[in-house]
Structures are given as C-alpha cells and as structure tokens.
Length: 98
Image 1 (cartoon, rainbow, N blue to C red):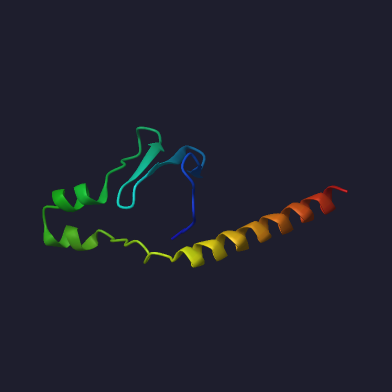
Image 2 (tube, rainbow, N blue to C red):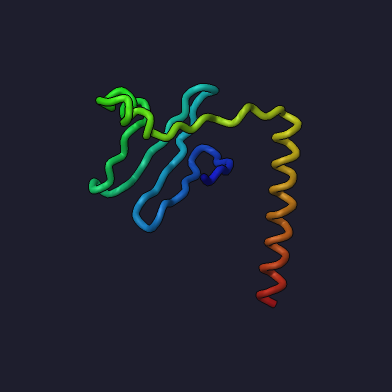
C-alpha cells in the first residue's frame, strides 16, 4: 500500500486514466475527487460493507485504518527531511544536466 503526504489541491494518478485530487478537509473529514472512466466501479468502503449480503462477502472486504496521529515535532522533522531530500535531488539533476 502506498502511503504519502499530500497537500490540498495536489493530486496523484493511478495508471494513465485515473486521477485522484485531494481537495482539503477537516480533522475527521477529507474531500477527495476521483477522475476516472465510467468503466471503473468506484464505491466507498462503507457502501460496500452495507450492501454485502452475506457475512462471507463482508469478511472479504479489506479494511484500512488511518495511522495514529503524528505530533507537531514529528511532522516538522518529516517536512525537514523531505526538504533536504528535494534539495539533494535538485542538485543531482543540475549536476546531471551540466
């Protein structure tokens, strides 16, 4: 499973034809827009669970839980680490172009 940090307005793609945009949100609710062809069946997990007729079907549905919250200090360290890596990558690209 891919796990990454994304800011409001940013997006990621799945393959060539699916785009997922994070629109923002609050502590307990997030707004996400999925741009995908109609041939894909995109359903919320709660709807799948509610509509599962048999207990066997309910057990087959994978459950994903959010990671425990991070402290402000942990977030600051993570951001600093990402900035250092981005700077390192930028310098490497410049070196490769020269």
